Image 1 (cartoon, rainbow, N blue to C red):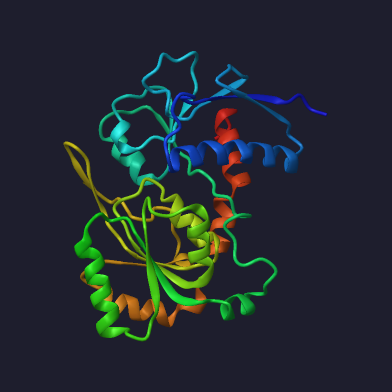
Image 2: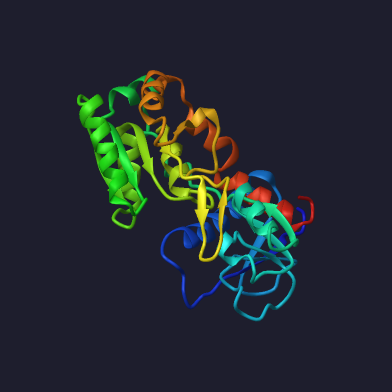
Length: 288
């Protein structure tokens, strides 16, 4: 048996932020173990202790570093605080940071739990379609109530026969998100720009296509940048992105193509826990 790779995982043990940062930490540790089991490449995870290679989750940026490490994923608001090898969760964030500095940057999207976020267990694809209890749910994170009003107006005037509900950011549990994605034919996303959009991937992992009203302008404290997205991890298999200018025609086209989308296949191929962890391990080992 080969010698285990000792991975030092560095994080702020005094504060684990609610939501995405902690999900990334826990999912990646689990992914390291899953990849080790499946690949036969053993690992030992060391929490806030030096290893053969070291991953600083980004929460230690303001602390004195013990040693060189890969840091991140970091967002655009952290671009002036970091040195060394950084990982960012999407290409638009990499481009943003490169406007201010030229460190070594790799794009590394974190993984999602495709076992937990899955279609209804034990059902064929046809049976899953028959089990859908509603047409849609709206994932609402835009912080602009006028956006939600515009979507309700579109549905009421043009698509009155469709039925669904709103799920608001911070007001749901993982169980609620999974239940909504499993029971809906599709999800309408009202969001600001996202560095990665873990919730989008979790919804898609349940094989629920997305109709995304895409926000492409990132507005930081002192600077703005176009080319961002509300769902950066994306392919045509995921659903459809739209703008407010073309939403009516795009929504009709999305509904007509609903049966053709394969969002879970997209997530499984590039964003499972094992795939993401194997990618980070390769970066840590200097092979990425």
